[in-house]
Image 1 (cartoon, helix red, strand yellow):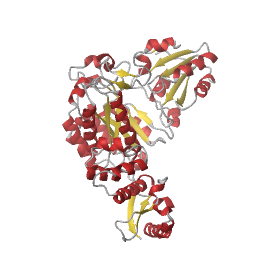
Image 2 (cartoon, one colour):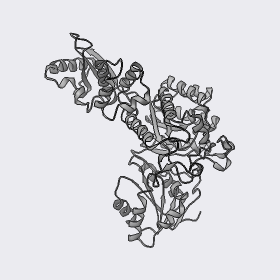
Image 3 (tube, one colour):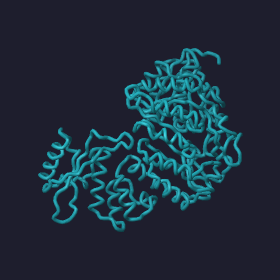
Image 4 (tube, one colour):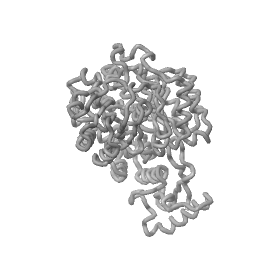
Length: 517
């Protein structure tokens, strides 16, 4: 590629904690560059001002669904101050909608890939910029599958079942190079290193060797870092599962896209998954208890009705993963879904999320959004896990019905759940108090759960705190102790305390101990 002078590369990330791998790959490809990383929560003016201060001749920006709505105004402000600047766009949102961005003032749009996977982005400046942020690494590019809702697979090579020709559709970084980059990031001041490989374990032998390398990192060298991989659970073999069972707790996280349990939806989406193998392997990974498991579902896939989605949700929840992400279908520019199912109504602006379809009405999607909101505010944040399990198992309510009913606050959860069949309100409240301590050591515990705030309980609370401190051998914050409701009339007082030094590296929860006062 030709070398460019006076070039600014602008990355507008979704959050402050995110970083841009693409920006630093470009910086390693072109000379005389400056990288500016911003995020969508910053004002258009402040982002533009940072670019203008460099007075670049050329400006490169990667466009994604999370920043596509913001960039037109940022570009406009930059062009007003620097009318001669050439704005060059890339990234999936620009590449698959090039004419739109040319009309908005881009000088050119890359519609193919830019630098290849072998470029090393991790300069000293990049490592410094990563401090306190999430680091990304790419050890393979492409995907052997061709799901209709995704842009990563080789759609042209897909067969009727959705699989591309083979793993040969994927470009792999040499193993020694991959290990060297992992080692460099392991020394950086970051907590999480996320592999952007779309199906990391599509090549089982290669995945095994890199898992083995990550697991074998010296604890002092690794400094407590977590490595996050997107994997296909059905592709794990027994050898790899045995290796993963040896990983230090918290060292590895897996994001597993099941997307649906509806066969018709998977077929229509060209999604090829052995669900029986996937669920069995997820169960085995969870049984070992050392790896954080994140499972994904997509609401809105073609041919999946509300009743069928409820079934998918209930089956996914029953797996017991640590995080269940419920996403909504996005009909992306460049995806085969956009051409195959024009009857799916979606927003015209990014992220092009489904509005309705022949299988899901707007009201159906609103119901699913209620479930998603409640799920995010409770289960996926590690809050009220024991309470939810108690209610789910005791009342026999389905998981979908439970999350649809509990609302978005602890008060609404308590009021809804205590009215269900076979639920004892004091037992429910006990679980909720313990859960609150386990998740956040009692910080900001809702008033209705703070029994110690009642005048008649203050002396009991003081005694409980003293007992807890004696057991721990140190002073603790008042928020780390809570009184529990009595088991029965006339029963002795009970309390619990959280041990802030026992946070589980996989679940993120603190150990909670019950004491009798």
